[in-house]
Length: 419
Image (cartoon, rainbow, N blue to C red; front, side, top):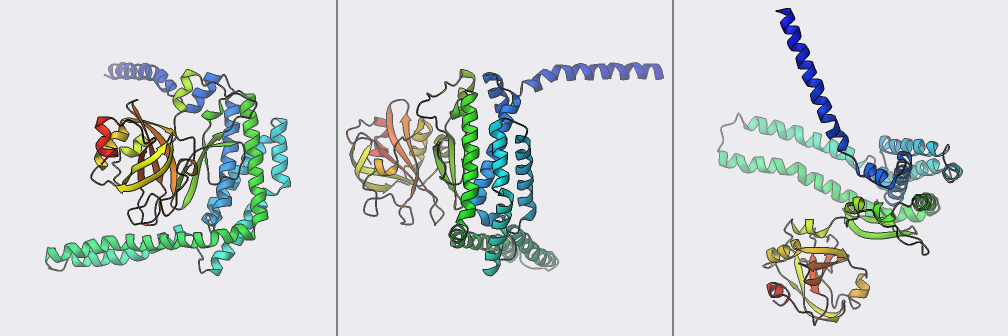
């Protein structure tokens, strides 16, 4: 019996080994975007790793300068960022001459000391305004303080014979109360940031500029290296929180909870032609956050710029018309459209944009346009899509318009644009 069992076990192990060998190539075929770029362009792994490390440092420094208050009373979080940054900078000391110069600049500018100093000053400001802990800690404490008594009350009600019709609204209130209180805390936190952000920038402008200048040095270092390696610059996309840097090309802009996010790639020098993107990599040269995905969410706040007067993409006059009833058809139209970022800004496209002629939110506020796309419906018809910043009321408004008053509108779209 033992010999039979051993033979079965051996056969089972052989089958398992063969199965692993069969699956191994499948796992090896799953490559990351970085690996595909590396292999296609014939790069060394350390080349892309170095670029990724430098971009990490730039993103951290830029965010820290713009949102210093997000790091107050968060020693562990900041220490992790600093440890990662110094570790990466140490690796540059043994690298190329340009990278060694970067490390020397990091040390001579006392970047770590400036970051620590800014955090202490920001915490002093917060304490003077009555804030002594981070928002995360306050939310955790409030959750504990609120949840335990509510749990005790709900537990007690379970043993009291009362009408379930009365119990249901009571439970709803208990469930909503923590969220309402958290909402108030978060709202106060963002109000505090808005009121004091500028004070920190003005008071410690010199220190912040040192950090930003060093971030600029890293960006220039990355760009130079990308050009040396002949990596198509349009493949390298990243997020920053300010527009204080040169030699970058802005792709799009978002506003997330009051914080600006700018999506960039590197700009080619004037005397350098764009490097062609190999066919294997063209899938990575796609617009960031394509609007088609938004349309799939069934947006409802659509404004149509009716009675439009204008030629060749410049809008001189319009009447903003809210079209709730046509939201489904507009979403369907967008889902059947291709999108490209408009080359011109709002000032060029609508020169007279003001309170007298503006896109308005559903609450009546003037919409601040953050993104303009040129949409092509079924390769037949082009029109504008304007995206607004998130309004104070919490709504996001989209507007659509023809690009020329003489444009021939397809029969299927006349109800939208000529209603």
